Length: 257
Image (cartoon, rainbow, N blue to C red; front, side):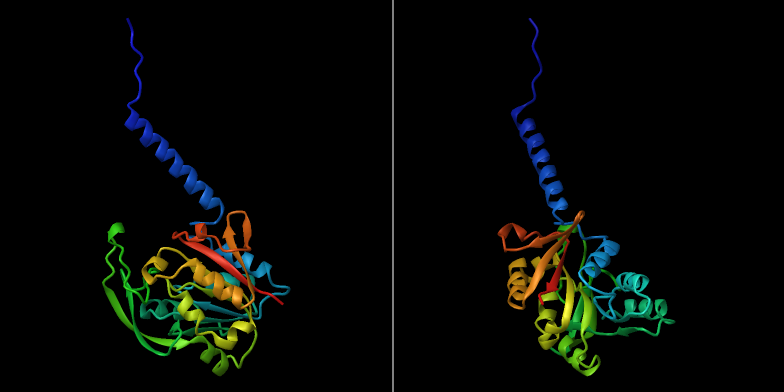
């Protein structure tokens, strides 16, 4: 008498759960959830697709080493670009990289809802993970002990004093969980920006901010929200709890006219 080998029930469950996690991950990714780790060219192109003409004034808040600024420049040779970056390590890189470009202004500030000083935390000098919150990343075996004192600025103050209240065509905001704090310091400048790109992800767990906060902030300010996906920009017409997805995701807010 022969016996047919069968998988143990526990093994079948593990296989089923692995398959379900794979489906969940791919479905989320195609919706743009977790898609925003290395998509700068698509981000800038999509952002500009909402403009009726090439941008004349662009702002990059959280410039890091300048890759986003460089892509704006590549597409727009005549645009003025103001790039904010608090890390002294990255400031040196930015100043060297754009030394010959007189239309790019490098600003040594972290943007927030108040002026003053704060501590920039990271896992290494110049890290792209640098945040004004000391993140807990033990589960990734990433220490977050590097510290640097940085200067804070309200964007509305800079907009009024240095930009003379000019209209801003596009603005990118990627400051590791402190995007909402920065936006709360935009004041009247918010009504004078055509399109804003902002990042949402794991760092918002550490700062205890949610997509719901951004949804209401931008809806009340008369912006239409979109999520950047592998196949384009998906309109986000209403808030849903399933949008609270804490892997790097990029959104576009377009001012309604």
